[in-house]
Structures are given as C-alpha cells and as structure tokens.
Length: 92
Picture 1: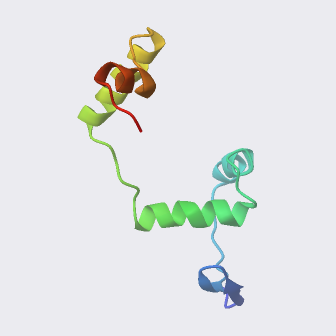
Picture 2: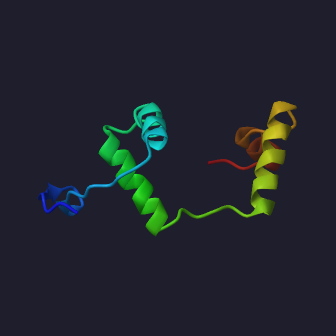
C-alpha cells in the first residue's frame, strides 16, 4: 500500500495499489463513466463501500410486488393519485 495521502470529501484519503486481472479492469473501464462516475477511482471507492456496508436488499416478496405493480401500470390498470382523491372527496 502506498502512503500517498491527501484530503478528500470524506476526510483524509490514502492511495492504495491494487492488482486486478486485465479482464476485470477492461470491464471497469467500460462501465465507470457510463454509470455517471466522475472517474475510475470514484467508481472503485463506491464498490468498496458496498463491499464493507452492503446496500439494503429488497425481499423476494417486495420484488414480486414491484414487478406486479409495473405489469399493472403497463396494462393501464392503475389509478392516479388525483383520481383517488376525487373518488374519495379529498381536497388538499
């Protein structure tokens, strides 16, 4: 690990050296900018944060409900908030 340090948004930043297979680096090069990251380092820092503190995962049940909701929307089986308020006589 290198000791090259500077101050970043999250406080003190330290530079590290990591070896990765060429195929993985090629994949990283293909996607970091595409996903809206300012640079490759920001992309890798975000991936490391996710490894240390994994994002919250939705349950299979919640994912199934979301899929059904999307299907209902595609079949025009949904009702807008304004329509619901009108039907129930609710004013803002």
